[in-house]
Image (tube, rainbow, N blue to C red; front, side, top):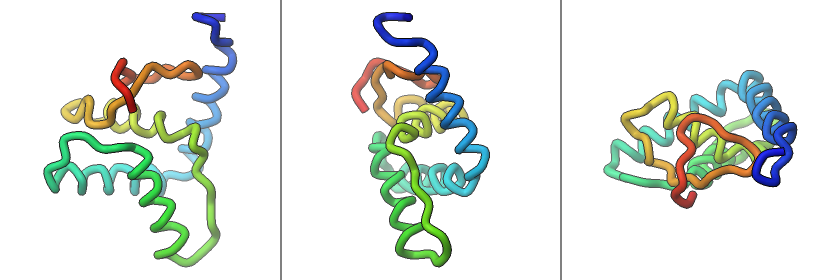
Length: 111
């Protein structure tokens, strides 16, 4: 237990996300692509939810094939992962301390 949060829950969320992330690399590619497009168009900050909902649109509406679900629990982890992989854009996604997981890029500003 750390700060009233079961550390096992934190580890479980990170493990579930990482396992899903490795099985769905196309989601990361789209997250990175759409974020870079937004940065290229001059955005200084953006919501990771906006990026994930565009991914949902692209994979559900614009493409053919089997639907898949992106857990809302994973959105903040993708935001942190992006800023970890691209430290020059640290702070692009406003994040707050997560109660269930802590990854590189975690700050105290709101998401």
